[in-house]
Amino acid sequence: MTIPFPIHPQDSLLTINTDEQPIVKNALPGVHVSPCFLDPENGVWVLRVQFEPGTVLPRHFHTGCVHLYTTSGSWHYTEYPDQPQTAGSYLYEPGGSVHQLQVPETNTEITDTFMAVFGANINFDENDEFMNVMDAGWIETVMLEAAKAQGIVPRYIKPKTGAGYSDE
Image 1 (tube, rainbow, N blue to C red):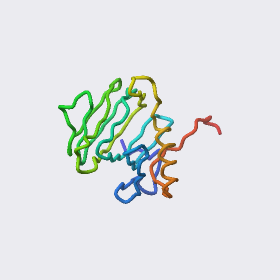
Image 2: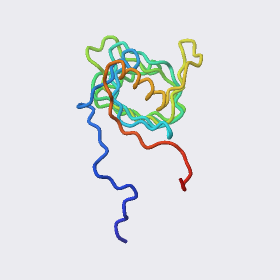
Image 3: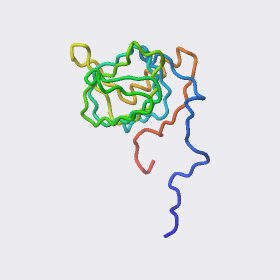
Image 4: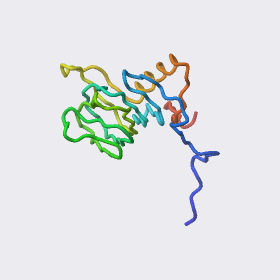
């Protein structure tokens, strides 16, 4: 067998260096985002996310799995305070997980993470009432609004989207 002909030939690699891209500050309060890959049609979002000390995200339910790697700082789930995630920690979250991410106020530095999320977060308020759905499309909208207000244009990989017929 010979090597197959590439279905999608590329002139160059699809690569993002988040250290060379402007970070979108406060896409959410205390949350700074460098988007890497946003695919609203397939529900996949890959982000570098930096959290300020004291940041607490809404409690949420995952419809799909999450891979999360911590490069600096620390955070934990309010449900698991005795299992902090620190630099070098890799965490796998299966779909159906429910938790709330919390960054200790005592942190002296930004907590820097890299996450690949499949599906959506169904977010709940402090009374465990439905708040919103956070998926790749929502992330993209919120992040782009924050970036526009900051006068920056983030660069990220976005698959071509839009369903259509094969003969068009």
